[in-house]
Image (cartoon, one colour):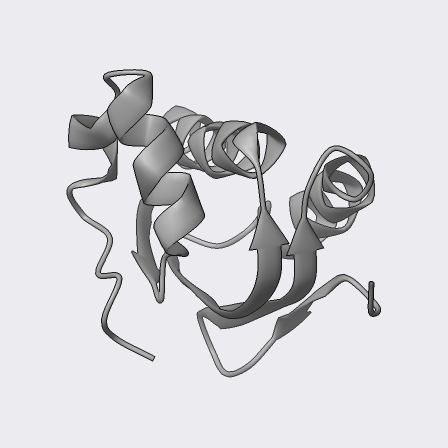
Length: 104
């Protein structure tokens, strides 16, 4: 397991690197809350996510909920297939329709 982090990568673009799993999402949520709180438009690149589990899906859904509370727009790129598969299994895949798994 490598270092897990979320960082600004432009005006409204952010990228996540490492794992989005039970062991890392709490730290990612804390860090991202500070980074995302004032943004009205977010693009979150998940291309560099190494491993993701259901906690990763929960984090994506939390980011979406926080953005909705602020009436902000959030788009995900490079959504890991594992998150899409878990969302499909949980029948919440339609919530991820704005994400693009193929875009780096």
